[in-house]
Image (cartoon, rainbow, N blue to C red; front, side, top):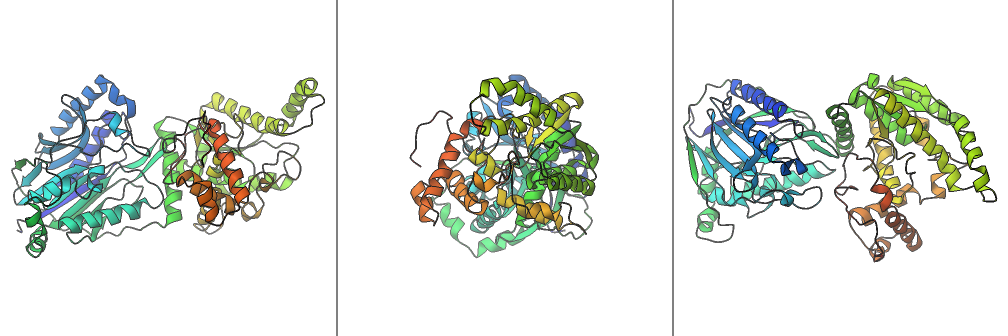
Amino acid sequence: MNPRAVRIALSQMDATVGDLAGNAAKIVDAVDRARSLGAEIVIFPELALTGYPPEDLLLKPRFIADNLDHLAQLARRCTGITAVVGFVDARTDIYNAAAVIHDGAIAGIYHKRFLPNYGVFDEDRYFRAGDEAPIFSLGDVTFGVNVCEDVWYPTGPAVAQVRAGAELIVNLNASPYHQGKKQLREAMLATRAADNAAVMAYTNMVGGQDELVFDGNAMVFDEQGRVIAEGPQFEEDLLVVDLDLGAVFRRRLHDPRRRKERLGAGGESLPTPLIVLPRSRPGARPLPCREVRRLDSVAEVYTALVVGTRDYVRKNGFRGTLVGLSGGIDSSLVATIAADALGADNVVGVSMPSRYSSPGSKDDARTLVDNLGVQYWTIPIEPAHEAMAGMLAERFAGQPPGLAEENVQTRLRGVILMTISNKFGWLVLATGNKSEMATGYATLYGDMAGGFAVLKDVPKTLVYELARWRNAQGECPVIPLVILDKEPSAELRPHQRDVDSLPPYPILDPILQAYVEEDRSLEEIVALGFDDSTVRRTIQLVDRSEYKRRQAAPGVKITPRAFGRDRRLPITNRYRGA
């Protein structure tokens, strides 16, 4: 038997924040499965025990103590195997930590060194950084453990661990998804593996947590930076891989860089204590071949929206969902995502036509619900609309009708949806997209009403791409083609069109990306080829709508910079240096 060979298992786990008992049970179950498959090492995601991110739960001493109690209990269940489990450690301070459990006892602990404090991350608010990088010897197999951000630094803990003799680097992650993130990770991990002539084993959380979605996709890279195994995206999975670390030794014989680096040329000087773990190798049957289907960019986003919606609804205990159906593309896509995420029986579509709703829009909504098989309610708002107009007539006398009268309709719809939600305990899914949220083309307490905004981070042009992709997945389109072809309209006044209030979406969305996601100035955006007055107007719309966005429901993050946790601007703000 090759002494340099080792079988490892990487768990893509859907943890729920705060569910210590439930998360521990999932860990124990995966340990049992890994052991039955002959794995010697099983690796879990970052903070798998607590869920990620635990946020201000970390300020509760009882939560920290309970997490340690559950770690001790599950450690006793991890016999006959080595398990690497993310948890919160407490010494003189608290640490984002990984426990290395060997044969039922905690053999060592790694403390995360680099604590991200940008984008959606606030780890510097809670944790203390680690100050050493232990390595572990399991017979002839020497491995280092680090956590998420640690591996993104070229001279991070992995370098010190490799210099101390590690040939396998185990990296625990709770890395949120956004479009293009997979490619960034792959390039970075391949570089780390090749530069260090080490095998890199990366595992990641999966599932939705508030606005965040974790995409799993565990990966193993060989010493030349090649992907040798990977898990699926957005699914719980246990990826089991056979490694031959003799190849690492042979590669290093032909590459003198690590010998010279040990003399002090570059890298971080960290203590790297060696912890020896007794090895008793199990008999292992050959692993079956497996193939993982890679998702294209649009499929990734659609799946992220489904998973984020599913987990938000289920983890928060809602019995079903409500979607206001206008016959437009946004509400049609939200209803489709909800049905895919939760099953048609858990979605109710509500049509609330007004005096301005076109017959086509009502027919299109009816066709959609027939295709999806969801429940369908029709509640006309005309009686309430007429009553509101009468109630306000005296105070509005002499004033020309305008936006206030238009928004009465969408606010009446919000009241109806929230009242139904109150009555039956169903979560209202808001239907606004990122283009609308950015420009304020949405009504507070109207179409913004709801508990979860599925498309909050999805630009309008991407909404159409997602709808077309979903329609291509079956024998017949689910979303009626007429909905994709019709001109977008709020239908709050006769002959209304979105382009009466906003630039056309193919022009608007690139401007929003440049301003919101890339922080480009007005001059820089105009230099990209956009009309000066259009850019100025768009920037003004974005800036003056911050107060609306602050009151919006949470929604799934799918771009590199989403509104909310990612982009935090003051509401009261007179800076106009765009």
